[in-house]
Length: 218
Image 1 (cartoon, rainbow, N blue to C red):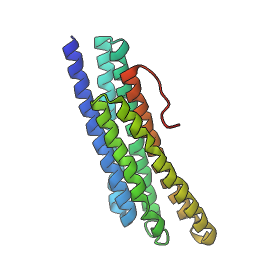
Image 2: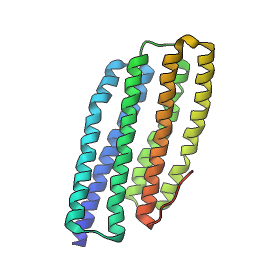
Image 3: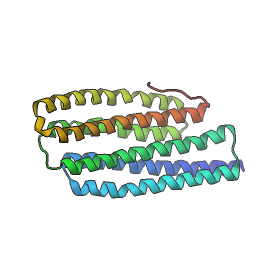
Image 4: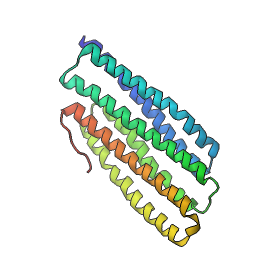
């Protein structure tokens, strides 16, 4: 029975990795579409989000079946709870990509915001790499790595503060583009939330491995 449970968990972890890869791809494509003002790509990102949602549901269903069948306790139950929490955070990150894609469609004809838009990929890449590294930490049951990854959220927050300031100044000097600039503020906020979601994932990895709830990088 123990061997069967571990096999099921290994398969669930591989499904999480698949979901995380889709989320990373969606984020990269969303930023590229924004930079290129590519409404067609943005629409495809919105449509493709269903793949992430379906995978989340499949993982949750497998977790429910595993709990019903195995009736796990202690560390085994923690592992399943962690899977459920991680896929929930990954799904929310995917939603942020959709929100960015929708914003891209709205501001596709606005060129005056380009200097700020071209700064966003650097901010996004920090979060995207955090997603991949957090999933590696999950697969390796690496508590210390999870703690280290969460600290990178500070870099995203620094970007957020700097870009918010630049957008606000730009809005004051160019009141005619306030609606589009406001949309850009939301994108910056979405990227900030990306770091927060990965921090949540890292907290659940720590919980799975130690049984303790730790607030990381608060």
